[in-house]
Length: 109
Image (cartoon, rainbow, N blue to C red; front, top):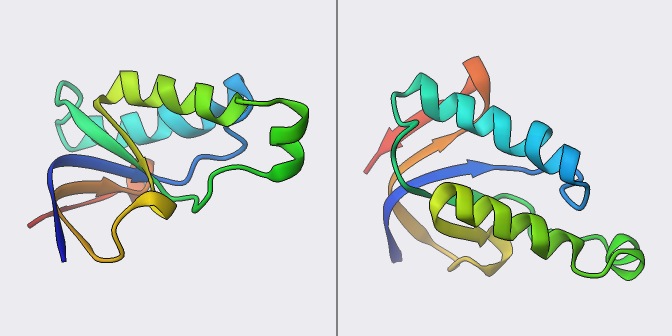
């Protein structure tokens, strides 16, 4: 396995080529989950649960739109972001918050 140190926040961004969806359907709910666990001031890495994270047709019409929003996610998190499709096959995270709102979960390694 590959050790993935630090605090992580895992979520599946919806239509994040669009700035409104990226911020309010993706970033806001996972931040609320972080707050529920008292981690709103922590630096962390976003783990984007979306495989390739881009749809070819959208990327063709709006080149770079996914990557631009992912840079915003990385800046907000403080420690960057990682697409699940780019992650090691078996990764062991120290701490991870996943899910949104009252359905959020936290696990500590």
